[in-house]
Amino acid sequence: MYLEGKVLELMAMQLAQLTESRSAAIETTLKPRNIDRIYQARDILATNLENPPLISELAQQVELSESTLRRGFKKLFNTTIIGYLTLLRMEQAKKLLREKSY
Image (cartoon, rainbow, N blue to C red):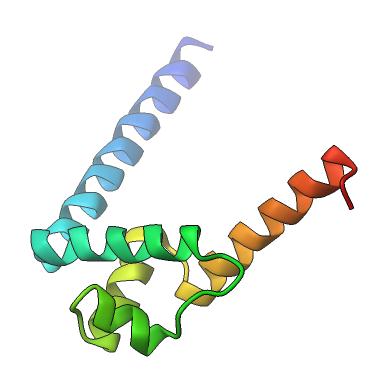
């Protein structure tokens, strides 16, 4: 039982190192300025959920190219822009259903 616990502890330490190195790799491949702009794009999407801008318009608003916005969004949030919008909309729908407003 002791050895099994130690093995699990070592596995947890390995997993923590992998997670840290992955987040460091994301930060090194994206410029800090671009990271801020991608977060800004995410906030724009969240505030305009019912009528979100086109991806091309969103890229213009945050002053990034479409490809940089798409790639960076995927790297930072592990989902596409459309996937993120869908997730937010589903969360809003779930909230409305729970409140029995609809």
